Length: 235
Image (cartoon, rainbow, N blue to C red; front, side, top):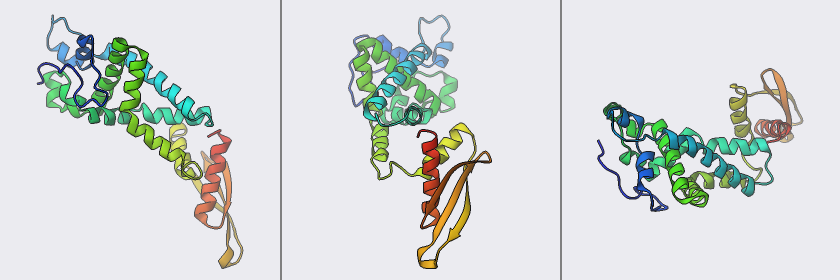
């Protein structure tokens, strides 16, 4: 079990120096560690996790709204959901190697708690809150955007592709999020000579037509149908 904490976060690209090192200790202390030390004057990180969730939401919302003013509220919400998801936060926490400095109880140690997505994501949110409390919003913002730089760059790359992205993939992700189902593409009509075919496709979700597309190939027609479906939902 890890005993003691460094003065600064291990492998932290921001190299943030805490004025109040107790905040860092609290952020990296899991409740299992405190529960096994009854009577100890220690705090676990759930308080900071709660605050960090709010700081993270504010920073990411502000950043996306400023960087992508052309996107709808729905599209911005989708981007934000991906950035603040457990898997995204856990990946960022692993890049910082937060797991090696977590204070865990014996049970969590034995169940490989240092590798768990949920514990790592929670710890990162707690660290964001600790930096916010120690250095203010600017410090919290700087750390958050820096630690999620890889995810933010990935989004930026996808937004600059011709057509904005792969429409079928985007519509499928939206359907899974809002309907917990996959879209269904139906060939409505095929016409023209072999060298100049024209395909007409409808896309359905929950037995309702969501979009219509025309193209020189089935793939192109499906992409256009997905694009129309996305536009109908302001995406």
